[in-house]
Length: 359
Ligand code: 3EB
Image (cartoon, rainbow, N blue to C red; front, side, top):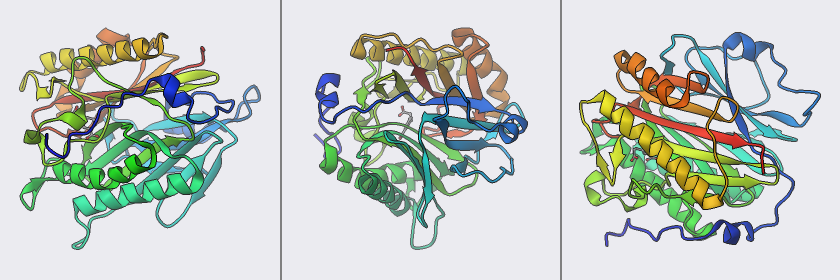
């Protein structure tokens, strides 16, 4: 086996939960807001005084008002034409901080951290990615959140070939170099992840880590990414298809970027309709895997889920939206973003987060 093939995460949730004592905790939730709504809201409710923003992700051009929490520009354009604020809310109290390397927000259970790096002659994509992951790990360990749950990776010009290797593949090398360190900390438990391309912004990595572990998922329709054969690059991608995190009062399901891939192969190049079918079937299959893994339902509805759809060609937006609404209904929170996807033949990718208060 090539060296990039690693052992599968075989822990059961019971094993993982036993690793750390559970504190009273609640799921995080994600909502999408207009600029006016974002600027006007106080984000505190008398009914739930400890629920606060962990961070806001800014999609589109919006000069955010000063706020204590991290506000991260995605450099991705919403296809609706209007800026969109993605607010991640967590059960607090939340402490906010920043150092020269990153911005972060911490609750008693969860750490959000974000770092952005610009390329230089000395620091190319691979080295930059390793540095981003090294910084993230250093913060996680210093603050006591050793379990990586979810990463979002936004790469400028993701598909461009540079020095003989596509930038996404360079990213996978750098991420692995950083990631082997995490395995020494806590064993192989890949986070859920997305890796997408933007026209600007350098490398942006933002992530969620926790004091206690989550349960990585496999999708029965797809090969685990960390087992991809070498044809997709010298280092296979270090992420899991999804991850469930159980809290005292509820649970989260983090869905990794899901595209038209079955097994390890891209399906239906050139056919948007068929790629959408495969992508949405993959999502449904992953949600099914999560339900079997914990023996509980994960209904993705307007009050329980937020999705992001990344669309390579903006003219495909109406059809992508129609496909997603056909599956999930028109009420579900979805933001459609113009973005590049890590394989050039893929036209769309969908990720998201499910949040349930129920036990
Ligand atoms: C795939 O399934 C499509 O490298 O972190 C999706 C989600 C993809 C995350 C990553 C890559 C990543 O392989 C690409």
